[in-house]
Length: 79
Image (cartoon, rainbow, N blue to C red; front, side):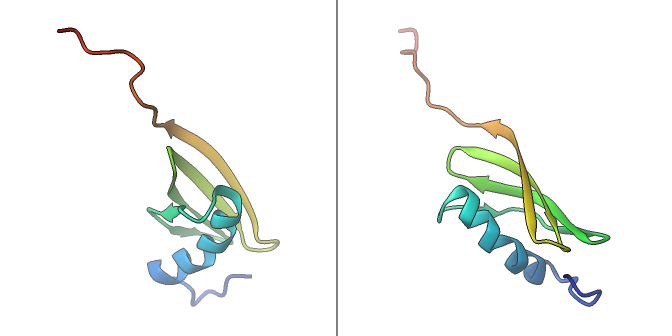
């Protein structure tokens, strides 16, 4: 459970990073973190993707949604 005093961005990021790394791998990075009631919401970068996440404090459940998938160009540029 997040205490009402847990409001600094660094503290919120620390709360989110472990479940995020479990879900997306060790290269996952928190980009933003905001406290909304008993939820921490924000954006994260996972290799090749930008994700939106919601961490519910009551059960520490992490919900993620892929917002942007980064791919490599499959075509050769025109000469």
